[in-house]
Image (tube, rainbow, N blue to C red):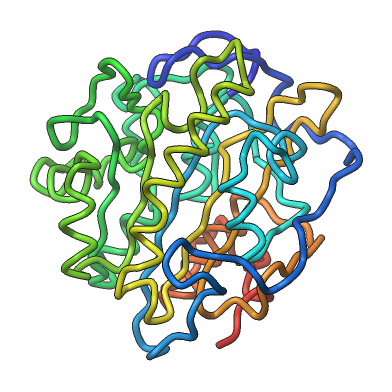
Length: 323
């Protein structure tokens, strides 16, 4: 989030440069190139897919760190090992500040509200929004999917509690997604992820770690926060990389909601890491300009869903992957 005002769904953000602030890129080291990445299981790169028919998409969204705080940093050794074995978009930008507009943009291609503060999923007059979103498309396309929220507890919880923040589950903010049975089926606690992963039931799996695991807290110590999230990733990501859904041509997207512009860094630039047996080569990088809209367009294209009107002309990140 940024140094903006307060929040209502996650925990306090911390800064704010205004909607769609665009800073000049500073020095931005690319990920290390090479083919010696390890996924913690086979000691080498990601195995080639056994089938290109299975299209399972995993997404992990972390919090509040600049590109230069992560890429090449000794504070995030595991995350950098993933960059080495996968691909990295080196010119990927958030779309707004504080946090919530970015999450909403990732699944709808639009911020949905002015975005000066983070607000709740039933905050009149903005939410719930009667707008099409990725959940709408997944339902229409009969694609099985779930959003996993660490520390959510009760499925489809619309109230912040402890380390759980509603603002980090964008699917809660749309009228059609709040339908009771639908909401409880698709928005569940992260404790259900392991069992679902083992059955390879779902084609789209969105994961939000809680406010500690995602690097949000402590907001006053970004190095400590990043170290915690790196450790969480080292424990959880190997489960995905070793899953049948991933090995059979699946794709894992890892990104951050927004930059914080600490140390004079770009106020909007964050890493987008792509891991897949379909990645063209380990350590691949691209400086093509992408945003959270590009993420949505890429998901739609992979799953053969029609593009939402909000991202019709956005560039998908397909350059990183073989067919």
